[in-house]
Amino acid sequence: MTSINQGAAHGPHGFFSKEATVARPGFSRWMVPPAALAVHLCIGQAYAFSVFNAPLTKIVGITQSAPDDWSLTTLGWIFSLAIVFLGLSAAFAGKWLEKVGPRRTMFTAACCFGGGFLVSALGVYLHQIALLYLGYGVIGGIGLGLGYVSPVSTLIRWFPDRRGMATGMAIMGFGGGAMIAAPGSVALMNYFKSTTSTGVAETFVVLGVVYFISMTIGALAIRIPPADWKPAGWTPPVTANRMITKNHVHIDQALKTPQFYLLWLVLFLNVTAGIGVLGQASVMIQESFKASITAGAAAGFVGLLSLFNMGGRFVWASASDWIGRKNTYFVFFVLGAVLYYLVPQFARAGNVALFVAAYCLILSMYGGGFATIPAYLADMFGTAFVGGIHGRLLTAWAAAGIAGPVLVNYIRAYEVAQGVAKADAYTMTLHIMAVLLVIGFLCNLLVKRVNERHHMDTAAQTAS
Image (cartoon, rainbow, N blue to C red; front, top):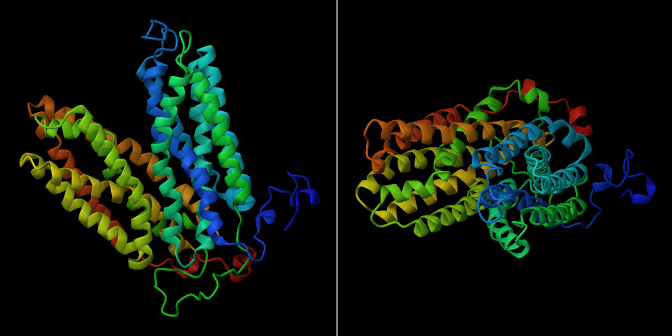
């Protein structure tokens, strides 16, 4: 392996080069998932950013909002920008990721995500909202995107026998990062709070440093397998699934295949159906069971959904190794459509247990969709450029992040304006979600093996 002393860190064979990350003989592939988790548990903080919203509206007033303080609508753009730049960086940095390897990409993610917090802390201190937009929104968002996709292709190469399980482990971390970040951030703000500070700026500094260190440890620990490496004692099955290719498709060529766009729609429709209700879960259960569900119980419901969202990423992705990626998505679409159709009936019947169970299962499949798609892409397009292809496909997530909440919020508002009771206002929305999942089922049905004309030639595959 190339040492630090054999080349400058920025040289072609330096410490951060792709060549320097090739594993030595005897390296255990089970060291790679923790390295990926070190990154994904950090960037999963994005789902917990809302804990800063209320304190950020009191930076000037400290105990209550002053006339010069920021409004919630102004602050809302911070998270929106972060998700937009997550999608853009994941989509456009794909080729660079495959060229320079996971270590440099993950370290760059650490610099951006950790640095974004420090710029935001300065923005809070100077009370300049533009610095928060730039810090967490743009710079931090780029860190989110690079950190999300960078370990995925490496995991898939280390676990050709368990692709789903490997990617599920890492992406489960993204789902679970908020469960650590939310209480941790609140505790830090309470610790730093004073008569002159809400504690947000100081908390941003601590988080920026901690996340930078954790993500850097992940970057330093990551390794890629040597060329033609296979797990000990494992050989690709002779009667291989026809959907799993042994060839590779170049990242640019993948965009010329119908499979890419069908899988884009598969992810988009699955995420749209889940993300729309995720944002409204607390309000939805309170309005559906007005007499029996308190705000505290609704908060517990949201926490339960987060657990199933996180657990589903590992369970469903692991299951896809046994039943196949296409069959896993068939389950998502068929079971999801049935549950969305039945949920309003559970609400009308006053059956809280079935209502909660249905949503827990729906959210497990929402998370499972994120974790299963990288392995699905590797099956279809090979592993040479799967990180970059995955990055481009994540634009479906960005689109669903807009479409899902818009569908839920605007249709509900229209229904209420028409005189429909709030408890019944979600029925049409949920039935529309069921229809979207039926369309997703059809898209998944149309996914076939990639035509051989799209495969890279043997020499190019060997070089990659």
